[in-house]
Length: 307
Image (cartoon, rainbow, N blue to C red):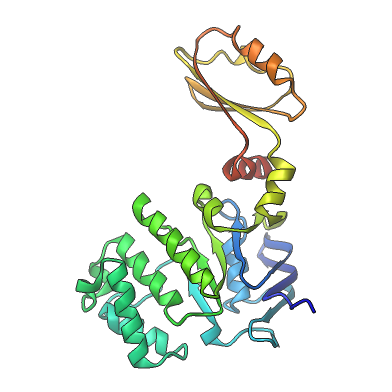
């Protein structure tokens, strides 16, 4: 028998004055998913996440949780972890005290909470700062502590809003490993983030929204099959780009001028690539050509710009 979805959202709507922040959004998250929630600033991502957590109320639509074999409108606190985009910890309380307190109000034994918190701080290179106040830490280290607070009690479901905020590339990669580890241990996750290259490494499903509306929902493989069959050429010039020489190329769907000397050209899947390359060689000033299939970043931009 098919198990019910861990989370099912149907026809969700939320407006603020004259702005439709969430406009008829539906999706489901299955047990074990790492589900990426993607969209530009103001797309309705954070509003939707706050509705899921009952921080704000929807105008209409339904949210149904099923985390422990029973349907709930909202799950028990011990079953949920939440990393908000904005800082949400006590700044003037010692880090270890804050982590233990937050874990215990989510059902964790105090001694076990302290033990686990110290283990996580050790892994994150912050064990020697456990008794310092959060406000003295850098933005990146504050983000590490907030991440620990959201998953310390081993929730069945975690909602992680911008987990890579404030982290350098090395720590971003470490966090990818932590997210994978937590997911393998049984935590289903929704992640909202802007770093598409990182999302590609950890998510198995994505929801793309723009202006509160659904653009795509499904697996990454489905997304690539539908939108990833085009070809993108990156051109570098040794003098300012001659726009007129590019925009008449056959099969050209989109031009993105990155600066005065570089451009990206997107061609339809039916374009004759041999013919395209032949014509590119006749354009003066090209000093470098690269080519790739659309990645998540490219598809994201394509869908947002056309909707």
